[in-house]
Length: 394
Ligand SMILES: Nc1ncnc2c1ncn2[C@@H]1O[C@H](COP(=O)(O)OP(=O)(O)O)[C@@H](O)[C@H]1O
Ligand SMILES: [Mg+2]
Image (cartoon, rainbow, N blue to C red; front, side):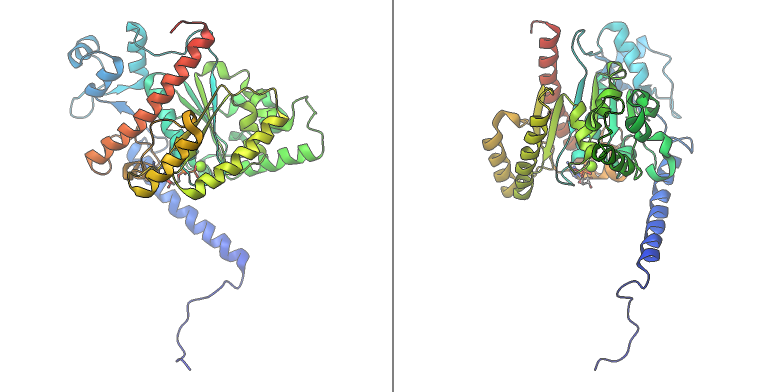
């Protein structure tokens, strides 16, 4: 017989209280991290807007450093007297000198659903980085967080979804009862021209509510089927943006159906792993049945995006297999598995919003290079599409 000793509790006596306490303690710990970030990044309540130094600002404007210094001498200075440019200011200069990229007149706003079946494939991370990349280029972007986990709301909104987002901030009421009122849920973020419809756990009520309306067959209440509410809600809003990015949850429920119901483009992040490929096969089957029941929906742009790629044997092999199977549908460039991308997420930021590298400068540069190459490839293809729509000759 082993001697009697103090044992750790093996299971809770009262599971309800047990998990309630874990939730409270966990949430408090996260609050502390977020509050610290907000303290160091902002005015104590909201994150301050991202700004750029003269080197980067000049590149973004499309002129030399001396040109920018001479033509915009009044840019606000930091504590050591160096000019700092907000994206708003950079866009004003771009507009003045004609270097701002814009969606061609006559081309439609692209509404991209970032969707997948599996969790952890890099959906939210890729989508958040694309949002900041596009805004930095000069586009106007609306991000819709459609995952009750609220990860996008943390990364792009810079807020604590549990503490700072109330029921009335969510799209629940709009999508259940009055889609045209969706615009009241849009908020600005710390990144100029990236607007957000936020999420938190209470978004699950929307999923359930939509399911219920579908089951009760009173989804015709206002003539809009349960999976077309987001599309209806975006109708009066979408022209204010060049791109709308929807971050879908890892499920095929009514939220994802609404994202697909609204989207005219689809990006599917996939990791170069056999299990991810298997899950993607299942996903293509369910996409096929969704579009079978929705023959009116047109997808103008569909790409697979290999994410968390590593330059070692197995991922290389899996990456090749994905390309062999799906050919041109796979973006040529990949998002690398990058410590700096993880570092940025750990600070509730993207690599584009970081003020300075978290890890080494090389790792930061490699991350940026990998992200830039993927997103530039996407933007090139999207411009090709837009120019066709607008009737512009290439
Ligand atoms: N390119 C990447 N390099 C390194 N880590 C990544 C990368 N993309 C995502 N991650 C990490 O993987 C985890 C899952 O990513 P996330 O974007 O939340 O996936 P999903 O939205 O598909 O569930 C997160 O911890 C995130 O920081
Ligand atoms: Mg996610």
